[in-house]
Length: 340
Image 1: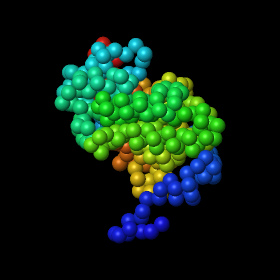
Image 2: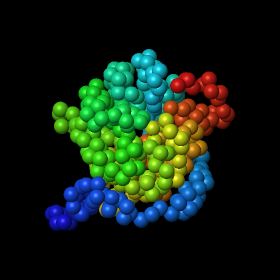
Image 3: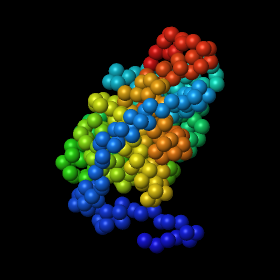
Image 4: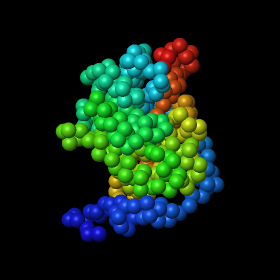
């Protein structure tokens, strides 16, 4: 590997890291050669981070930052254009009684709901290709036969392209867990690469790709570590814990492990990859534990929308109630926030 001008270290490619052509065999050698996860140590560190307390002044900052990092989500078979419009209205104005309340990072919907989300956002929608920190609200779409991932590659690519063409700024794809658990790493790698290409728009910009590992089906921390590395090697912009349809969904130890992979990748290449825990994070108290874990593992720099997200539907309401408590000194009832 040569060193380019200015003493910048060239980013190693997947081809260089696996030491040859990217195949099932070369990926297996690389991924199976990763150091095993110390489960006891991982869970103890996550538990320790989860006990950290923050001061009241820091809590106000943390609550606002949580809102700014939320992908406000509805992924139900009963979703309608009206429900999506209501979700978007809440994304734009989370608390009608407090205009200082920040907006969420994105709304996350099924692909066929993307046009309604884009239309409802109007001027609040991030301009295509502007990136997730451009000040607007993004539209994220789940794709690739979410949540199972059980479809042909052609169907998965069409699913992705349709959502991007409809205006999605981000694609949340699911990996084929069956292929991964069978050791067909090359197939998973190739699918992520192909979906990444399908995220490209005609103007040359690209929707951001979040790769959902569905960690609740991967069974072991070692598998979560391998799947995280595989998704990053294949070009994922984010690694995401879960669809929210499988238990367990996001957990602090799993998210910590994924953050450690992202940290190690950054040290190796200089590239920053995002992390998105999704499913089961419902309280501001729990969300603050994740903020602390991010700050202590990869640094506070990651606490911005293009590097960390919460996939959530009910979390926002609890954060708004906690925020009102800091302002008024007493807890408001649940009727002080809109029903999701």
